[in-house]
Image (cartoon, one colour):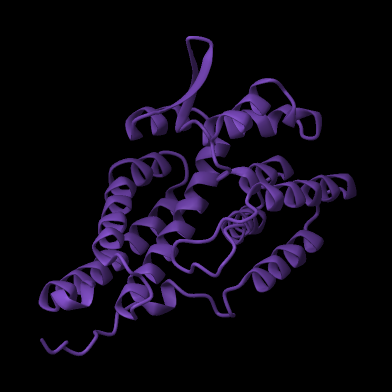
Length: 252
């Protein structure tokens, strides 16, 4: 079956960067914004310590939209977004850790105060909200990580205004990544295209139901930005879905 011409997805400028998207460029931007900030020297040093630790915690992980791209680029770009919007140092540190894999060891480290030996309790408070998709429970003296529902997670997150701010920046970057994922599946860079479409659709739905209403109650301008990006992403998703329906062999 002949494959029809691949569509040109609109709003590309909203989902790509003005520079080459790689770890070196993302980290260079972060370093520049941090150096130009009005933070005290000791706060800048704490942030650099957090950056080094975040890199080690994400070592070996890669981005979904670009399997050759280290995962750490995302926490760094979220931290950069917080910096650019005048977030305080503890918010920047929390942003660097906001996507750490929530396994038993990490949750124990938070609970037992091992992380707070290096960082202030305010960082731990923010991470407790941001990293609360799971809870740690003991069954027969064995620690088990249990996933919360989206409603439970976002309800808990909304109780901390600075955590909502970080989540808003995080979701903006997530939506940009989803836009790049749609481009990637049309360029044969993803093997499981239906799975990718389902993932984009799920994140869009979550953004509309939970994230945007939550952010609107705290940060109206950021919420409007998320709404605009969501609408543009829905347009791109519809075009990609239509193309894959018309060309089922492209899913192989």
